Figure 1 (cartoon, rainbow, N blue to C red):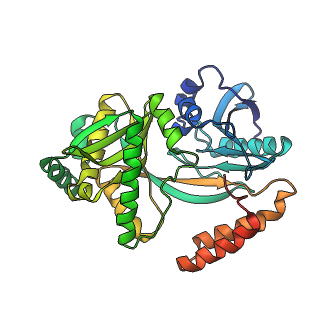
Figure 2 (cartoon, one colour; figure 1 turned 180 degrees about the vertical axis):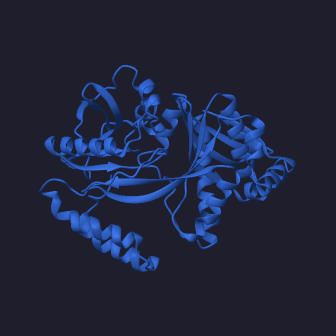
Figure 3 (cartoon, helix red, strand yellow; figure 1 turned 180 degrees about the horizontal axis):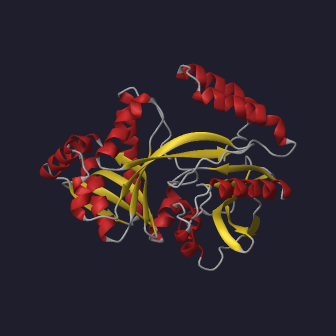
Length: 360
């Protein structure tokens, strides 16, 4: 099967409506792309056609490699296709690969955020990385939503409400700053429990300025829990069409004491459902046995676990192809069973040669 490909720097008419039909990720919609776009991130839109019928869609960014002269294609999510047919997805990936090579794009990166319709369709030279996310179905009655909560979650939610947890939301830039402070506090609490230090802003290219822009465009909101006059837990939620995705969250020690996260997720889900949203993605599950508690918390709320796969090529063209062995080595070290100190040392050695070329 071979597909033709139509590429544009502007979305075709009714792009978002077409994407609804193809069950696309929230990160393929124009609202997200417009919020993240910059001088170094130029939106690009792909339609994959079988004869004249559009059978798949994809959108993302044209990005420089390591801020240099070479370009790469970056996508937050995989290819959307209403038919969910492996043959179509394989043909679309091949067409994308051919397009990249012919147009001097050095790399193709397909992340898998909100990619709940993922179907295995592996082809070379894409390399896979498995991950998972928890999604709450809001296309139900309020009673059905609450009945999906485990008893332990329901108890914690009631405890939080009885201890003074008050729900709110807003679109002000100051709420971003409040959430970032809470995220720092969450990191401190987790580090004290032996989780190790981690990056706070885990979504590529989503920094304070982009968050403020998305709040201004009303494509996102910050939901929070107050205790008296203090915000003790907050979450940045992208809201586009009928989908919502909770990206970043922070909670203080006082917030944990009053079970603020349980109340926050519950109240946010109720609000989104009342506003007509059909799904609420609670975010991904970090790798490692220590993070099983994060997975349990989300599943106890009645969310469903979806598996997906990030895919990326090595460098497709010379002169950067010579770095592909180092990309492979870095990935192997990442998933190897080595002490973190050893991994960190090896990363530093590898990065001396890569010089950031593996970055998005």
